[in-house]
Length: 146
Image 1 (spheres, rainbow, N blue to C red):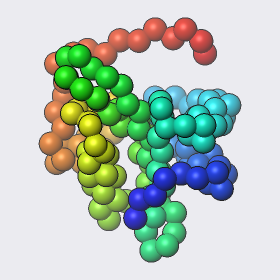
Image 2: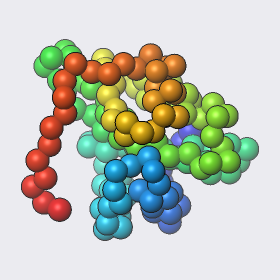
Image 3: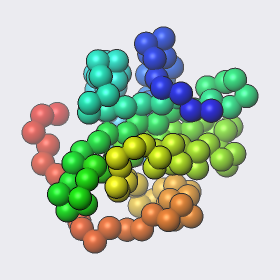
Image 4: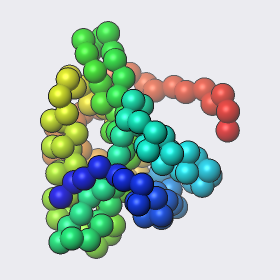
């Protein structure tokens, strides 16, 4: 089951997102203040960031974050699949696919995008099975504030 993150999920979100950023799935950890600010933004609105809790058998199994932007090139809204974290004991049980079906069914979305660490073979395998391909562009970024 997938449901929207709610205020009472704060501690759970911070714990799970901390586990994600301590894992090999990401390049580096981020400050807890970033994760707290993300939760505050989730509670403020879903203008920029939206989040869900994944449940299995009535227990919290993980979370997912998405953000939306308009792309002239795509001709509409693009949904960035920002984060997906599933607790190890719930992996390979279809929850990742369920999250992607949920995200891809959001009205008005014409394209989805995601980033993945090149060494995260398990995630890459899932994404390829779901029809994702490497994009034609190299991604670049400039950090303005750490």
